[in-house]
Image (cartoon, rainbow, N blue to C red):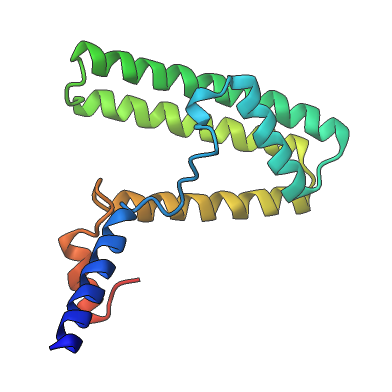
Length: 166
């Protein structure tokens, strides 16, 4: 009888500790959200990360910081526009033409960014940067496939069971 009670208490305590996690393993509460930082701070952080990753010299750091600042300003303004639309209740579904226009703008920006990076970086650094971008895009695609609550979709479960997934 004592063993059964002990096992039940152990199971309940495990259950409670598992529920406390809430799926925020990677979220550090001490780190500030990037959305709360100024565009200059974001650009500075990105430039420093790239300097460490690509071993940039001083002139490259200055050019990359300009590029990062421009990108951060654009992202911040887009984020504020989306937030304003959401607050006003204008977050309606885009038409196919609007969606196509957004995709064209995004791709044009990526092409321009690649050209700028190719000018600033040497061949080895550029190859390393491209590799990091493809890894980053792969991560985004994997996260996009997941549902908003962090769980896998129905198709992912079927694929894992059959052995064809990931």
